[in-house]
Image (cartoon, rainbow, N blue to C red; front, top):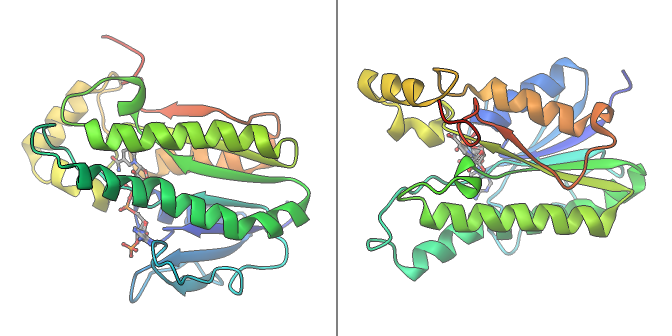
Length: 234
Ligand SMILES: NC(=O)c1ccc[n+]([C@@H]2O[C@H](COP(=O)([O-])OP(=O)(O)OC[C@H]3O[C@@H](n4cnc5c(N)ncnc54)[C@H](OP(=O)(O)O)[C@@H]3O)[C@@H](O)[C@H]2O)c1
């Protein structure tokens, strides 16, 4: 397989780190961005310590001339009642889930266009398709991610593909509060049709597929990698 260049915003934890590992195993060159002080990176990966919400961020000098794809992994899980949520909470979620992705995609457009064919992966949540209590602010922002995905897929076809993955609960640092004791872990596993919660690599393998040429006819889609949680009633 010919080595390619991939940007992962948030490639130092959870799903992004699993994706970085998987891409690295295939011999690709990685460009990873996060705010971590001492990130554990795959060998050879280039790293930029930066906050994607920083208005002064300069990704263009970090990126290679030609970029074959990118994944935007920062996100949030703020499960609160609608009564407890303030309008500012919705804005904060929008910034990390949508505005950060827009900043990253804009910076990567030129090198992706130079690649001729490129692929972008973003992350939604099962809570967009399936109404779940206490998910109002995250569902609203991730719904916007899905809209952004389809809109950009249309605007940049056939050169750049855009897809999103909608996971259900997956065992990452972001979800730690929801899985931090045996009772919560057992409850989460039993609620899922596949009788387990997700692992970072379950989601990373789907992202790997969407970034690869194996998915060259897939664009504007939301792939539900959730153990069937959003679609099945069992
Ligand atoms: N885990 C789940 O159950 C679940 C379910 C549904 C959807 N998702 C979505 O899946 C995606 C990946 O989630 P995850 O669970 O793997 O999250 P995670 O473990 O928190 O990893 C997020 C990554 O993004 C980086 N990041 C966060 N804020 C950043 C910022 N402002 N600037 C630069 N980098 C930033 C983090 O590193 P630093 O903190 O060091 O910057 C980290 O590398 C998210 O969009 C999430 O909403 C997750």
